Amino acid sequence: MKIGFIGFGEAAYHISSGLQTEEVERIHTFDINVDHPSFGSKIKERAEELNIVLEGTLKDLISHSDVIICATSAKFALSIAKEAVPFLTEDKIYVDINATSPMVKEEIEQIVSSKCRYFVDGAVVESIPNYKHKVPILVSGKGASEFIEVGKCLGMNLTRINDKPGSASAIKMSRSIFMKGFTMLLLETLSLSNKYDVAPLIMESLNQSITGKYLEVTANNLLNRTAIHAERRVTELEEVIKTLEEANVNSLMSQATKEKLSYLVQLELNKFFNYEQPQNYADVVAAINSIEK
Image 1 (cartoon, rainbow, N blue to C red):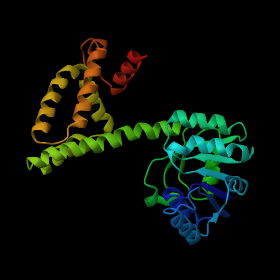
Image 2 (tube, helix red, strand yellow):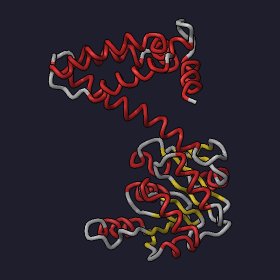
Image 3 (tube, rainbow, N blue to C red):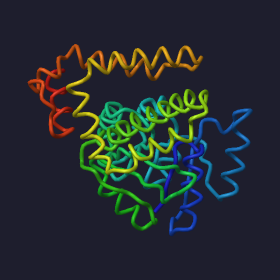
Image 4 (tube, one colour):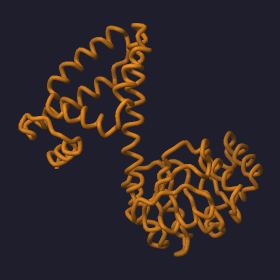
């Protein structure tokens, strides 16, 4: 099995270094930056280190590879698919692991499927340098099952979601909302608590609130109460923002939280539940979705 990477940046390099321990026949790559004054030398150095074949054109890469993995950048994923499609054949497996929106993956699938049966929407959900080729990757699309069969032979950690392109990326995007947002909320929280020398106490308190229960229990507690008490929490956030500003701490995340709560007030979500607290977080989410239609 010959693997080809479009782009030989961090992701392709670390996955390739792991694949070298498996029964991969050959790894090829094509990177448009190979002659770049800053990046080119690093690409060549790493390719030589791993005995990777540096192809001169995208056409050569595709013709010499059974599985083509696009690992460049989200902003280039669509344009690269358009460039690649003239060289694809029916038997190739085209995998895009860039962190794009589900809609972009759907568009790529439409482009690729004109020449190739096997498109895979891949979503990497852990740090590639830590796991290398065994990094957990969610896959969807018509080529997901075929890619998983290849992955089994190469020791890869692939999980099939379904045949719909974009599903894997939708999971990654949804997860990113929480993980990136939570990180920034944590930063804002600790910035203020540090000003008052209470950061250790805050960490202990949050540990009990967040990690002391299953996430589903926490979601039920937080979202269900918010559905009824959004208006009161807008007022509370106004006081939070004042506190942050007086402490000279950037309040961007708290301001956004206030705006989101104000939006729930405008939706009159509490009326949807007849002013009674819902029992399940899923009911809250479904209610918002139905109102927004």
